[in-house]
Each structure stands twice: as C-alpha cells, then as structure tokens.
Image (cartoon, rainbow, N blue to C red):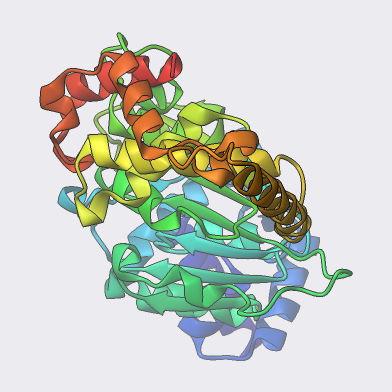
Length: 410
C-alpha cells in the first residue's frame, strides 16, 4: 500500500510538474493526513522538494526544481499548472487574463491592511485570493464565470475566511458588504476592494464605488487606462471622463507596471496596479472645482443641463464651504445662532425703515450665493453655450476638456 501510494504521488507530480497536498489527496482519494505523511517522507529522502508558504505549499520533483531556477519561476509554473489542471480556457473576449507573476500577486496581497475585510473581483482559479486571505480577516471573492467553481471550492476548503459569490460585479450591490450602522470607536476594521477585472469595465466599476466607505481600492488596469487616470492636462491624448472621475473622487497612485508576460494568456497591452484612496468630505468643501465636478457626476443620471447643475452646485458650495473643518452638528448650531442674530438685525432695520427688501437676509452676511450671483459666475467662466445646454453624460472628451479648464479658474 505504501509503495503503491508513494509511486502514484511521484507519478502525479511528474505529470503536473507541481501539486499541492490537497490536490494529491483528491486525486488519490485518501485523507490529507495520510498524504502529508507520505510527502514528508519523500521530502526527507530528497526525492521531492516543496516551495512556498502555507497555504500555498507545492511539491515537485527535486530534479524539476533544479531545472526551474528561481523560486518565482517555480511559483509561476505552479499557477500555470493549476490553470491547466482546471481544464478551463480563459475567454479573452471577456477580458480574462490571469495574473501569474508571484511578485505582483504578493504586492497585491501586501496592500491589505492586516485584519481588514477584502472584497475581491475576478477570483479566477484563486491564486490572488489565497494571498489576500493570509492578511485579511475575511475575503469575499466575486467571480462571474462558474467554470472556476471547482478550483475556488479548493481555495475555500483551505482558507475558511474566504467566501465566493458567483455573479457580475457591475450588477452587485456593494452597499450590502458594509455595516449598516456606524462602527464602534474602537473597531478599526476597514474594507478594501482589490480587483483584477476586464479592463473595459474599469470606468463603470469605479462609478459603482463612488461614495462607499471603503478604505482603498486597488485595481489591475491596462496601461492606457493608467495613463488616463494619471493625466495632468486636458491636452493629454488620454484625458477623458475616466481622468475626471478618478481625480475628482480619489487620490491615485500607480504602484507598479506589469508586462504582458506576467499574465496568462498575455493581454495586448502592458498593465499597471493602481491604488485609489477616496477623498474626504472636507476636501470637497475646500475645493470648488472638485465640488462642482462631483455634483456633475452625482446628478448625471437625472440628466440636468450643465448650466443648471453648475448653478445649483455653486450655491451649495457657498454654503458647504462655510462648514470648513467643523462637523455638520457644530456648523448647524453656529448657523442657528447667526440666523437669530440676522433676524434681530432685520427687525431693527425694519422698524427704522432701512431694511432692503431686495437683499435676502441669509445672503447678506454669510457669503451664500443667490442663484443670480451663481449665473453671473458661470457667465464669467466663458463656457460655450452649446456645452452649458447639454447634460453631463453627453459631453465628449473635447467638451470635457473645455469644461475642466473653465472650472480650474472658477
């Protein structure tokens, strides 16, 4: 029995190049305890060697390891072997390109704040999922392709803090993954989103995440998209709505660039790992341009004309900027006190006959714009009328560039 099991272990590893104990136990239909005893004996005898760290430990013939060279080459081969064993051919039409470079996988894994909850998009065979599970308190992996179900079942079996959901990320209600109530002051657990998704859905995916109380978002994107996200000038060829969306709502940073050969199958373009940190509310109150752009994005589905969205945004900003770094509660208290003072002053002016009925009380002393004042500011921006008369979603990249420049001097 021992000899037969030993020979079969060696034969399976020879055929697959590298295997995990879990894979061997399933192939041989024996317990993992029994398989670990055999593997330990084979390693001690020098016939097998193992690479990686739990839960990503792979066994291979000692001669294979010498030929393979550096450990990252071994791990790359192990990932490719897992893809091959799954029998799944990635659908390039759906943008399926598996990350097979261990250094890049480790970089994404190390981006997790220990103890945080992670939402992963595009789990595939689970090679990144395993890395995330080592540092996160829990991982929720969303995968659209059910062909990966068996492979991900293995990952879940070895990582009890992983949950897999099969579905479309663009149809997922991400709000359901966040606590409905405010966290306890001592609870520092955050939520991070890490995704290696088809490049063509990057922009609509970011749209879905706007406003979520997420600590960070880390995406693997195409190089062209990374350039667009980082574009600093409206004259850049890559400038467009993704540029404004990313820079309005997030602080962005390119963590690494990735070559085509770091994926299987290789994509047509180089790639990059980009991190997005959501901006705080106080940052919008202090930046008129960002405040107005946020207004345009958030009201786009209602299709208001640009001129109307800007007018309302300017009025709202004049009020929001009064809050500054104060909490809303502190600001509201201060405004109630000032409103009472205004009313008393107005009463004095009325009784003395000096009250100007054309000047709204709340706007005289508080710096809050009237709609007429907002219209005047918009006119001074010199935005072409044909842009002002369009809804935001109908603007092309040229229109967006003109609007963006105008808002820089608003």
